[in-house]
Amino acid sequence: MTEEKKFKTKTGYCYIHPNHIELTRNGKRGKIAQKLFGNSIQRALILYSIIALGLIYVAVNCYLSGKYFFTIYFGIISVYLILSVIKSINNSATSIIYRNKIREIKYLKAKTGITRACFVILFVDEKEQLKKRLVFLPGSLNNGAVETEKALALMREEGLINA
Image 1: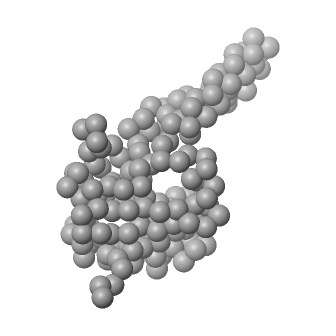
Image 2: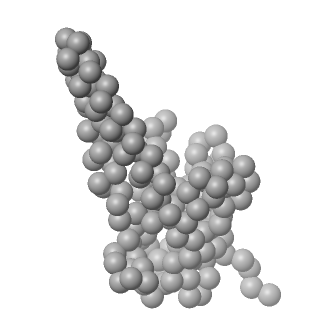
Image 3: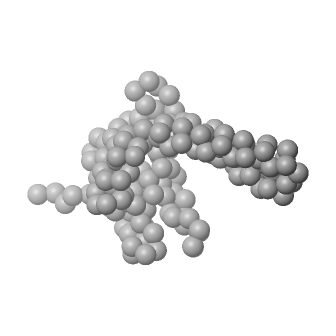
């Protein structure tokens, strides 16, 4: 019997199969993520856009009231959210990625206390569009360093990354 090739992610597990990668959501975080987003990030992008529009409205009201500090503050936050939405348009939340559709997998190291380590998978979807899937690894409170090393070793062993 062959050993199951998997590693922990932020919300579940990543299974490495001979012809595809499967991402599952488990536990409380996984259930919440599945209910909120399903297999699409459109809901998150719509929510960010609505918040950005609300902040623009608040910034305009602050400007009209002569509260220039708050105008700048809310303006910067809304611009950041809008740029994040634009940057994330080609992201995907798909749970299965076929190996023959993968163009590249990058590993991004964690910035201690700021970000988590993650894999960025660039692949072509069923509509022949280039998409990006972010696979976040467990954080420092969940034995992240050990799990990250396991994930990197497995991805190298499978020939999915060279880093």
